[in-house]
Image (cartoon, rainbow, N blue to C red; front, side, top):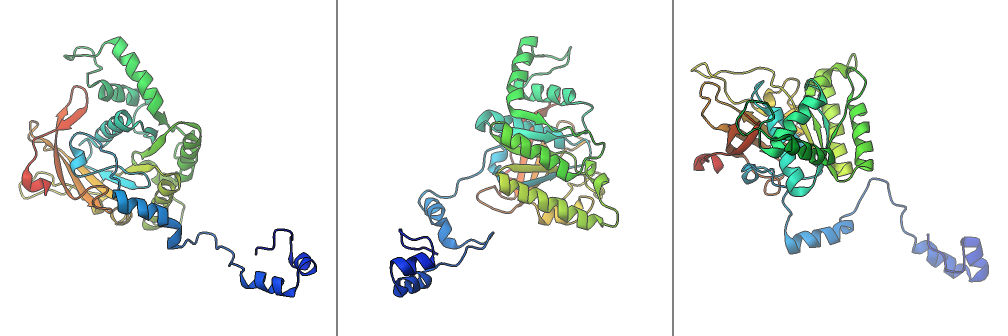
Length: 321
């Protein structure tokens, strides 16, 4: 309700002006806005910007993956793979590349490492593209390691709750504090999913729990304009007719088909264990916002086991379509 500039309410308007002015104010009154409800007209400026300049693609994660996958704030990515095929390592590579190219920082919950120091050691190798371990060719110098630590310190923050089995609310609470206190925290990593499962309430089915947590992660990504990565193990490893493992799919993840349906991006990394010289395959298996965050397909990668660094491999045209 808007009253004349010299009045604060209907009574004052009636005394200062007249009944017709009061009626006019009542006729011109606008409905009180409903919390959480928006109209298309609120987005005119944003839509005009999109029309004039097109949709802005997400960040290129490097290693040639940008052909098929881009990383955008406000999205949930879910990665899976056969154990020891390199889920955490490829994610380290993605984070380091984005930290270098876009200046992002990351909140990381990754309790499978023996300690944060071991995780930092792997990040140092990825940052320098040199081995950390004594005796390996091309080992980094101590000065190079120290410089890398200083850079990593600006971009990585480890979430280590005191609880043996922290729940998702605890992790998101710590991440929220980091986003508010640190500069440019644009990514949250939860690796792996099964470290959260122990916090499921009694009487709650696994499917219900998965849906609840994924809803929270999706909302958190949008609310704070960050990208969330969730790493999860497949429930079983299928074999082909020749006895070798086949590429896991997002709906193979233990727990629920929600992992596929609720994610913005789903991917799998796959190694040919019987052929160590073969390229590693990165399969992009779901992209909700095609054209902005990528498209379905396979990117082949080379892997340097001495320093844990991936680089672009030899692509096959039929896989890139």
